[in-house]
Length: 527
Image (tube, rainbow, N blue to C red):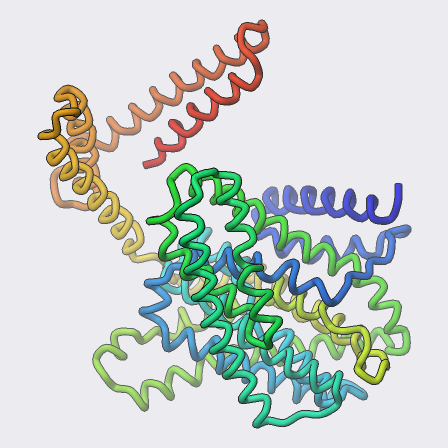
């Protein structure tokens, strides 16, 4: 077996095994993967991994940011836009400066340009682990959405800063005015390209009825925005995010239901595989990176890792406990008072600033050489410190975040459940209204209309009872009993189909076709 085949096989086994371990331990899988990936890199006989820096960001990043943007809670982002903007821009810049200062002053021989490169790499947060923990512990959705939105938009800020810092290292010059202009131009260009590509993709998918083709288009949507934006110097990340948000808004009205179902399953798996692969790949690279840092005593490397990690963590905590008071002093409008967040949720949000896939991809994409054909200065040290920050934030903060949430007693207030019930009531009322209009049509049958009206009337009463609008006349108990009956009936049908296939009465293809319909019918029982 060649090195490439061994790498692919090992990667698949590692991702599957470590993810299963994460589920068994009831931990977010990034935490287990970052630890397991690091250990795998030191297994004797493990081949040295050298990823092409020019393709890491292009391969991994568009998929991650487009998928996150497509499924983002846009209304929550709008209602918390100022805080999201401050965290996505101001906190990223503050973290970059703080890390650059610590790295330049306390890490031997690290230039300002290399220090700012490191600061830009570790400044964006990763939403995955923190959001998983918060949702599992029923943390209020508004704050979960704030963390996800911050992670979505701060990637763009950090990667524009990353590009400027890398250019300063590679070329050897830096201008603050030029960097500021490039930042604004990259942001504006990324948004414009993202909107244009989003509109084009929406029109294309509205005319595509074939599920495999439509889902394939969705998989390439992030690349369609990222690559042209990146090629002209605009923000490829912001372009992919904008396209994702645009499609998230228009998608329900232009994508057929069957395609949406298939696409959601594909994206769920793809997001997991891409994130998991990144964590394992950096672990496989860690051994060779550490070997190339042999000139540094292990104790000094550990000290550097602790100092940079503390700079990242403490800067975020300081930000969340200073900027809100500054905003309160400047803006005393009633609407601003209504948005104020107490110290307990703010501490949790500050502690949830874990680093992950984007920082990994950025670190691995560092060029190997400068324009002068010299090795990129301290490349291996930057990658090592990036991994140290990811390890510290994911493991330290990730493992202690559940205890912090429980200790501070920050829980849901029931608004999310109430919102879901309202949404289901809106849908049931819309169905009944449509049935009233269809009743007068000649092509409809009275018995069909009455059967459907009875079902939707029951659904409306059930959710009205859950909302407290009417008395609960046993609707939930009857609904649960009905669902159990349907599940047993569907299971009997599946068993009969399997037996028919085993006896040669029907083909395997026909069996799977019918079972797919039964599975879809069962999936509706959750409502």
